[in-house]
Image (tube, rainbow over all chains, first blue to last red; front, side, top):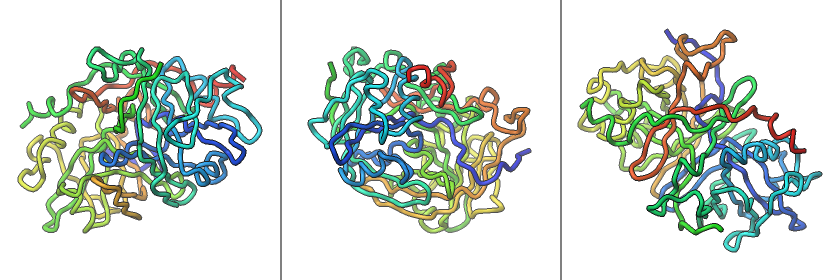
Length: 190
Length: 190
C-alpha cells in the first residue's frame, strides 16, 4: 500500500556538486548544490539549479561559465562547509585551506584538491521558480591521476564519490556494494 | 596532477529513473534513464533527459505527463531490463511481471511494485541536443509504507535506493556507509 507524502522534492541519490565561479571583482567562490545532474550526451551537458539569492547565481549569470568540483569522501567536510556560508562575506577556499585553480578553458575556478572537475560554459538558463536551472556544456573533464584505473578511466573505488540524501538531517553517504551490471542483470528476466 | 579526459558526461552518482508514460493507444510503457535529478524546490520539479528516438519521448510530448518509479535494490534487474528494450514492441510491465498502475493525478502509469513514485506534469521542454530535457512538476510523491520510518519520512535503510555509475560496463551500486551529516561536518573546519 502506498502512502502519499505530498508534492515534494524526494529523489535518491542526488549528487554533491561543488560549483565554482568568479564574482565581478574576480574573486573565486564555490558553493555546494545537490539539484542537478547530467542533462545531455551530445553536446555533453550538465544541469545545476541555484537560488537567485546565492552569490554563485549572480556570478554565473555574469560570467556564463562555472565548474563542478566533485568531492571524494575525504573532501566531504569541505564540500559541506561550502554549502553553509556565503561567498559574499567569506573566502571559502581560504577558510578550508584549498586552492582556487583558474580554468584555462572557461571563466571560472575549480578546487585543485578535489579529484574530479568539470569545466562548463553556460548554454541555457531556465527560470523554474525558486531555482534557476543552468545548463552547462562540458568543455573538459579533468581527474587526478590517483583516481584513474589501469584503463585510463575513473576507478570508482579510488574516486570514492559521495551522494547527498535528504532527511532529517540530510546526510552524505559513500558508494555501497555492487548491485549488478547495467544492460546485463535485466536480461535474465526476459 | 590532473589529467584531461575530454568533453564527456562524467558525474557520480547518477540516479536510476524509471519513467512511466502512456502511448497514443493508452498502452503503458516504462523506460530507465540516468540523466536527470531534482531541478527546483518550489514548485517541486525534477528533470529527466530522453533521446527523441525513444518511445517514451513521444509519449511524454503528447501526454505532457510522466511518472518516476524509483527502484530499490530488489528491483534493480527489472529497472535494468526497462532500459534494454523498446516499448514499441514490448509490454515491459508484463515481461518482468510488474503492475502498471494508472496515476489518479497525472496522465501516466507507474510501477506498482517499486517503493517510491513521483507523479509529474510537464511544465517545460528543453531541446539540448541529442537529449530533450523534460521538466516535471511533482504533483505527488507516493511511498510504500514498508520504506517509511517511524517519523513518517523515508527510511533509507528500508528504501535501499540504487545509483548508476558509468564505466565499462555501467554498474548499479547501493548506498554505502554514512560519511557525515550535512550542514554539520563542515562546521568543524570554520
